[in-house]
Length: 139
Image (tube, rainbow, N blue to C red):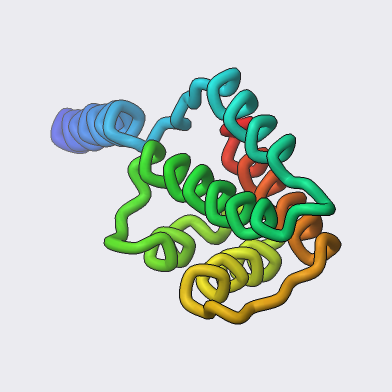
């Protein structure tokens, strides 16, 4: 091999190393949540749910939804609304369809005044939010 070819190969290797380093330092890193804080807040929400108190049903779902949205915002997921953020981070959830159903339930609670829900529906949605928070690493 002549000197020009060797120099060209060395130059390509140097450029490749710089590109690798740039990708390494600018790539997304996993967000670190304050897990204890999220666990405490979720436990507080979970303990507020009372089978004999339908008013607690609605508060439970709304607060779970807020907590999940807060986690996504802290992760830096872009979007104006939670639904926008769910579209961006959906691949992180083990059951995205269940998360969407829970979020839609929250929307129904917020917008429909005569909505009647069972304890089982609320409890199931609570478990979906719990798994979603686990999937993100918040709890």
